[in-house]
Length: 216
Image 1 (cartoon, rainbow, N blue to C red):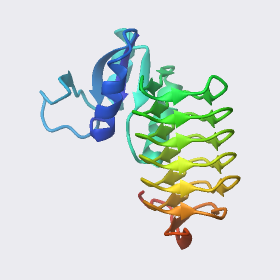
Image 2: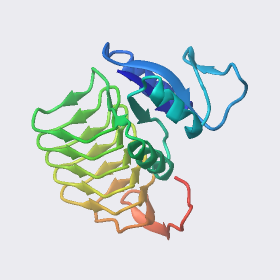
Image 3: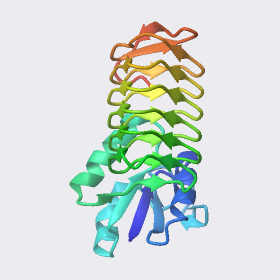
């Protein structure tokens, strides 16, 4: 299948490298609204512009896409636009990741090097599980979530839509991380975290409420 990668930064490079292991996938272009010239390339593949180029690409045989953008809100917007165009949202799953047979993955997600997804875990659409992160048994990771490198999420945790868990964080079992909330890098979460907040520290404490348009 011929696909495009949305984004042309660091996350896009990770996704491209993961996709290179799949002989059934051919990445033909990166699509990004920030271009530095007509001949710009990423990983030797052309960067060709924003979403306005997609209808022509679809006519020329592009069937699928994956969004490779770190910001959850921006990634979600791209995901919904691509889905409305009829593109198949493909996932990038690194061959060194370990995914239990009973785990379930949604569409358009990225599972990076060395990630572990354990028994009965459910991963939603357009999720990023970064390098070396552990998603333990029966966790539910909802749509558009990002789990940072080397995070450890214990069993039966729910991470709600759009949440961001920073690098190296630990989440105790049976907890809920609220929708669109941010867990700061290196935090240890021992209590439920409500929606739309930023929590940091050991143990993690809420330090602010997120406003519309706040970046991660």
